Length: 192
Image (cartoon, rainbow, N blue to C red; front, side):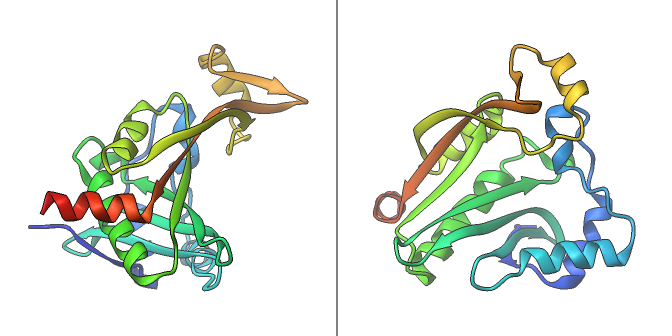
């Protein structure tokens, strides 16, 4: 069966209860701690803010293998950011690249977006390779606050060479990557 790219529906988010869990504390923030329907509904509502966010997914027989969110849309500058997550049970199976390709194809053809950006932690080499595969290129590196502060001590103890405390907040190096519409679409066209 071939995975299908489409917009998320409310009932799709309940499938996240079946997602695997990351055992590496650097990725704990991608685990879904939700247990109730209300928690899943709240997550869905937060991801569906029309003007600023939309969430899409890659589905295999109605099971969400991963999701991708457009955020921080700047309609004036014609640019946005994205975030992506893949079910830990399906990492290293190529679904991340499939989801990104389908998503960028859709966004660049439907919305007046000329440039898409994302941030990836420098230690997340698997994700960085996936982003490069679909055309993202590195534009900047900088130390930033790590998204998940709840596991600060665990992460810092396990990876003292990758993390540091700055004014009491866990920080690490992030890479900003971008892909431009004209480059992405021309590469896809020449591959056909």
